[in-house]
Image (cartoon, rainbow, N blue to C red; front, side, top):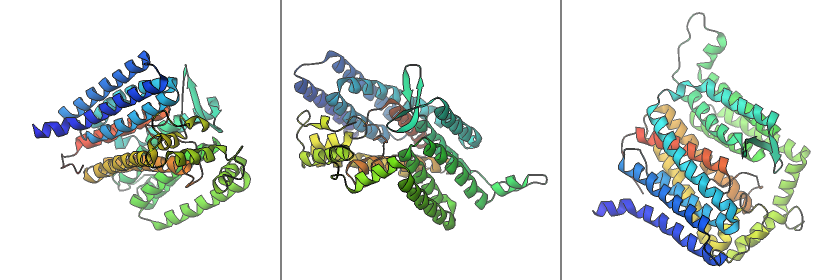
Length: 421
């Protein structure tokens, strides 16, 4: 019985956060929004159903979804407080993502030979990038969006998953001894140097597409994932050195010749030099974080509306203003634990391909979180990527859920080990 209480307690805590957030939003608005109340009720039902399925059936690590759910709830509450329409859409996207999370975990668990589909992953990524280049449109300075029917999405979000699967396959597939008649390039690929070169070619082709789209934030994320794989599996420090030199050269060229990068770097170095124009976003972000203090001004009591794009790029600043630095640290700790679970699953699985995939997903979430939070607190130059599960955005929400569904499927395959949380 005592063990059952521990099982249900995380779900109860999250449902209480949803209830408290809904009450605070209603007080802030001065009335109860029936549509919002129904959507929050549906979100609670989704959380309960998914958690019950994960916990009472052998579907793997059930902490992944709980951490994700808490992040999603925090994001929904803040979006409902900032703009009701965005919050309501986010609830729907969260429910869709949670459903795809379950489906993806089951498909990945029971379908075999994912490591044999490297060519399809690369072709799929290139096709998505070409479709964006030919039919995409610009938003926020980057041509990285596609419109399909009445929906818009970023293909690069899906390519992130294909990129991780590709690198995992390149580095972990078994080496085959060259046979007579094999092409020299095939024999070269089956060497360690060949694997490093293959991974580098794929990475730089994808990076080239991203740079042509002017999507520098996502390019940095792809490069970080590639460097993590090279550091763990490359076994050749020369590649790390050459990539470091290449990164420095590209950075110098970007800062020297690309005006939008020059503006971002200048704004990062001297945000108060032009507060009313170039530095307006970052200075308002810093003001909001400072106004929140340690404990925050309370949900609905802050003024995050002064921050442009607060619902997407700067939602962490709004969280800090209304819940304080302590609330912001709590969000960061949730991401730490989520990345930790990914690395723990990677270390505990016996399948080399799944081990690499789990590591890549952990790196993806960790680096993406660092880039966006580091940008809004002026630790690094600001980039236009989203905070996973918290920022407004359907494509980001759904594709990150797909990535975690793969992670959930990997955890279901491994042997049950004692949880450390």
